[in-house]
Image 1 (spheres, rainbow, N blue to C red):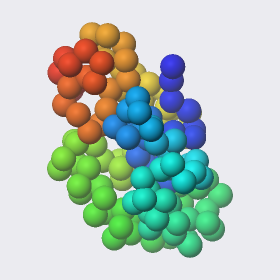
Image 2: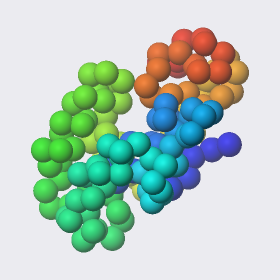
Image 3: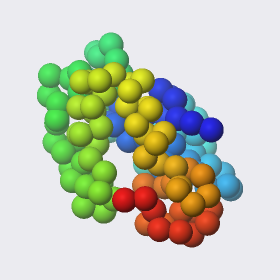
Length: 135
């Protein structure tokens, strides 16, 4: 178990903690995977399909001259409000310390202290043991 570079979407979301990725039946394969099994809104994601993103070497939005663009700011605001997770902060951490350090921190932050399973950003309780999510 553990997150890797492919789990981190261009916008800074860790797909490995998305409820669609973690579900048992028809799980999503994550933003970096090109698959028709992903939810429609993920396939047509304006951030993932952004022309400016294609010009970056890293594949992350922080490298764009428009960062943080309106789309990123709107998505970040939703994630901060609903899930207490900042995508802009995630991207700044990756930019500052590199994706390897970010992944080490993600692997520590998103594991249930009670059962050791991966937590979902979209749930206040562990999906495996129903205990409160680490805060």
